[in-house]
Amino acid sequence: MSKAVQLDRPEQWPVGVDGFIQPRRAAFWVYLSLVAVGVVTTVSSFFDDYRLVPTAVFVGIVIWVLYGLVFLAFFRSLDLFEQHPPLGFVMAFCWGAFAATYLAISANQSLLSIISKLGDTGFADEWGAALVGPTIEETLKLCGVLLLILIARSQFRTIVSVVVVGALVGLGFQILEDLSYSVRAAVQFPTDEQITPVIQIFFVRGVLSGLWSHALYTSIAAFGIGYFITRTYRPLAARITVAVASFALAWFVHFFWNSPWLTDLFGDNPLGALAQIVLRGIPILLIGFAIWWLAGRDESTHLRVLADHYVSDALISDDERKGLTSLRYRRHLRKRYRKDHGRKHARTYRALQRRQLRLVMLFGQYGQGKQTEEAGVAVRALRAKLPASTT
Amino acid sequence: MAASRIGAREARELALPTRKPYPTLWSSVSILVAILVLVAGLHVVDSAIPGEQPIPAGTTIHVGPSVSFVPAEGWALDKSGGGPGSLIISTTVIKQDNRVAVSAAEWQGTLEQQVERNRRQISVSVKHSWQSEVQTFITGSGLVGSTFSFRSAKKDGQLWIAVDNRRELAVVVTASGGPESFQAARGQIEDMVGSVRIGAGS
Image (cartoon, rainbow over all chains, first blue to last red; front, side, top):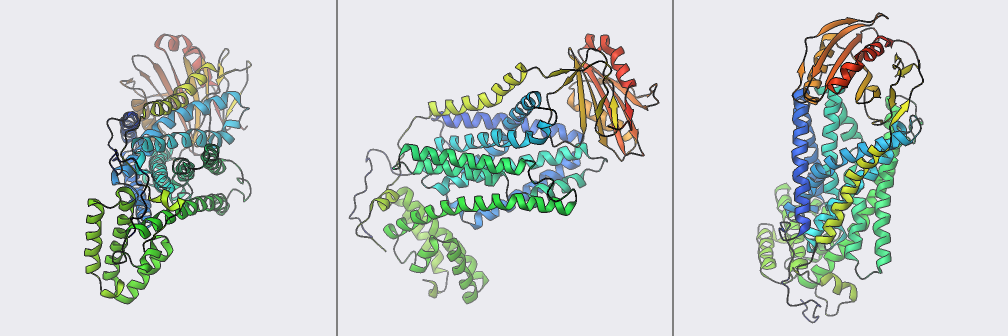
């Protein structure tokens, strides 16, 4: 490993990253107070709903929590949770679920009311959601991303580290919004049945529309913030342009989804509705995929440089080094491993891949030191449990 | 594995973060102000824009395809609070601090079940409220249903509920206002309830 290059850093400050508990920073208290008020308001609101439709509230919470876990499992399968400590993700989720949602309820109502008053009859019904949703909700969700960056700036070293926090903020918003839609559907359902409306909303908002929803919108907007804070060597105007363009793109995909466009294209029947959902959703998904691909490419370069500079072949082999920069290749290595050595060893190999990733990220945060030594020991321990052919 | 020389890009990636203190006060305050502008600012703007649309005397207002009513003289249409996403179609008219909302929604249950639902909703939405016994009402046009009144420290109100089983439709008139003004407007409110028609066509 080379130590020929003296990296440029001020020696007076300790190397490393901050945690997300930062009582000395104003951003922490702004975050905490808004989330705390949101928790109280949200719990109180659902308690009122519980008095009206207790079964719907209970079933809704169970279903949407399970749904959220599926998303989290998906994020974990992409190794995104290696980006920050768990508290960072919890805080991101809580901002989306509690602060952004309760703030959006009031602001949405006000803006919708203004549009109703100023617009022609029926305009608010037709375009209200398309104009209000993205304007209020994207802004409030992004405020959470900005606050988290202010709380622990050094945690955010790559675009992916910001984008994944955006996704978690969006997911929190999405889950709470879906839950409240489920409960409202039960309150307004044409019979006293409480489970059917929850299932209906789950199917429409969760199964059919869940992929191209808030988690994706906010990750698109967060991409620009990630670019802005990591590309400090680029001209300020370029960084601002990317940040504004990303927000505009997130606004537009949210607008597109909420707009009445394509509504009449397939007629008023279930198959037509399904076709309309897919036709709206696919372009949004493609845009989101492109954003994540760009962020992933940036992450790959970061990991490759760190691994090449710091990590010995004994800890990460050439093949595994390649896998670090490509999710597909990482998956290919696991498949190959399962084929050669069986499922049990493949699970251990999966754990090894995560440890290796964590090790590389720790090098990026602390350089050579106690943390990376411990992480290296953990990698060696896992390697020792595997058949020798893997190295 | 190791590179003996590194370029500018690599140097940037390898630059280690430091736990250097940095100020967040002004940035945090800016975010807080942006949120306040969005939430409180929009509320102030909304309050400043009049949302009352005068209604010419004798105008029939349609609430969805099957329900209509005639607002009393001096009442105005409330244009605020519109928007999509609700299964209930509703129109509200206002005069001073009195509001009368006429809503129509699909309903496959009985009148008693609808009344029970509305009583629960009032007990949740109007805090610390008292509710009267349910009574039967019949209007001059033949609309039959149930009614009950409610009262809280700041608000008096009454609901008239009718169910059309053939159309699977529930019509709910919710009137409320300050205790004194509500009693003063009661005559006009009852006239409006009397004007409600189901199956009037749009």
